[in-house]
Image (cartoon, rainbow, N blue to C red; front, top):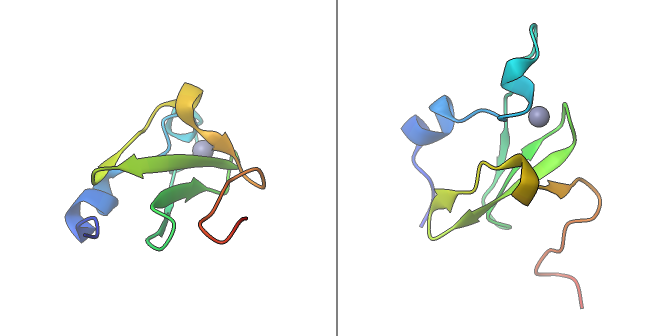
Length: 70
Ligand SMILES: [Zn+2]
């Protein structure tokens, strides 16, 4: 099941929203169940359709594990 557009519209990177001039906009990767912030290069997981919007739980971009990895 995909996240709703309404929910995606209000979600923002908790790290970047504190930064003036940054919207904290996230890219939704539906196939990987992830939300990606390209500003601070962090990936937020989505578990049971609930985005885990915690900086401590986020994964640095480039170190993510996707379903394609062996
Ligand atoms: Zn960010």
